[in-house]
Image 1 (tube, rainbow, N blue to C red):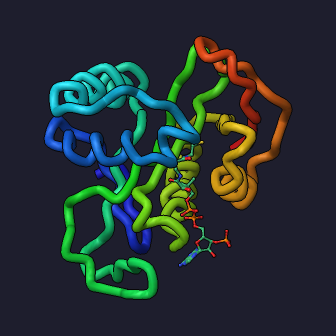
Image 2: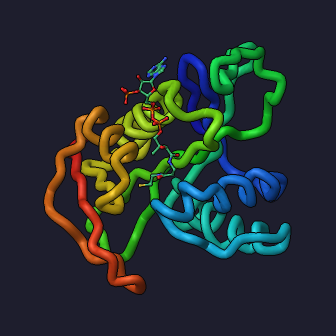
Length: 183
Ligand SMILES: CC(C)(COP(=O)(O)OP(=O)(O)OC[C@H]1O[C@@H](n2cnc3c(N)ncnc32)[C@H](O)[C@@H]1OP(=O)(O)O)[C@@H](O)C(=O)NCCC(=O)NCCS
């Protein structure tokens, strides 16, 4: 476990998370707002885990983590609330990413559709900022979002991040909004 919050456990991803990785990376909102990583098969997901999050944990001591619900949390699907029976299956990703083109690590998050709009992303992101400041002693974090990603920008502003111009994403050439927060 990396940290926990009132309702969530945040832990490192493992090679056992391939089904979840396929689900989250192929969520249509993820593909539209973030990127299509082309991860479709178990083998693709294993490569993604090895070259992405697991490599980042080794190289930097942080990366994108898995977010799980603590047992007993209610799950809201539409108007219906049920008890959480899917303990140990992640509901989202949250963490820090070191990118060559940004001066500070950036905070990233993505949740499966059933687990949005319930404050879980904010709870995980606030825990991530605490981790960055108190354990990793990172002085500043950044965030990048596509200009259309209102949900993400709303969350970043709630986290106290300040919009600070734009940055061009190498490769795609897309101009992204840049947010910064001093910790
Ligand atoms: C971006 C993303 C993570 C935001 O998730 P989210 O669920 O909207 O964010 P939150 O966790 O802050 O939930 C916000 C809403 O839950 C509501 N909510 C319900 N119960 C709540 C609770 N107990 N505590 C806090 N908020 C709660 C809040 O009212 C809030 O709505 P508001 O915007 O009207 O204030 C999500 O849209 C997503 O995964 N998108 C796809 C991937 C993506 O774009 N990632 C970002 C890349 S930069």
